[in-house]
Image (cartoon, rainbow, N blue to C red; front, side):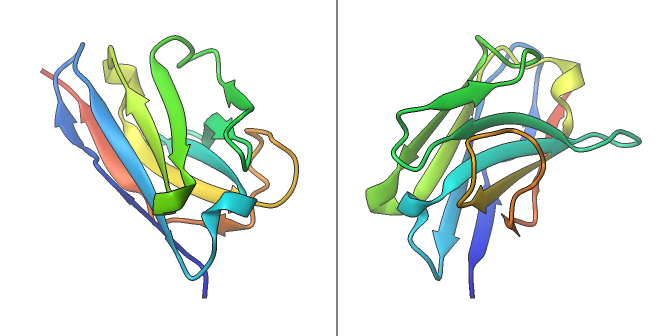
Length: 122
């Protein structure tokens, strides 16, 4: 059974930072494209970043470009999302997902984690 578990969410003040982790169990993360997505209340799920299986190719949505960094440690079977300069509009549930298809932030991934809440507020 393939499982993805996100962690690292929480409450942070505007301008602060958080690092989210996406840990895999039951499969080798290193052969999958991994994406990070978020969904705010009343809004559609939004793709914000993804990384190829090797980590050599990454994509960022315009809304997070320059502030968020995706990285992966295949030896630890974990992908990270470093989030800096956080804004209140970054408040959402953040999900990671895995797929063996194209490197894309379109929401067509096969496997999803349960999500972790990120709240940016003073």
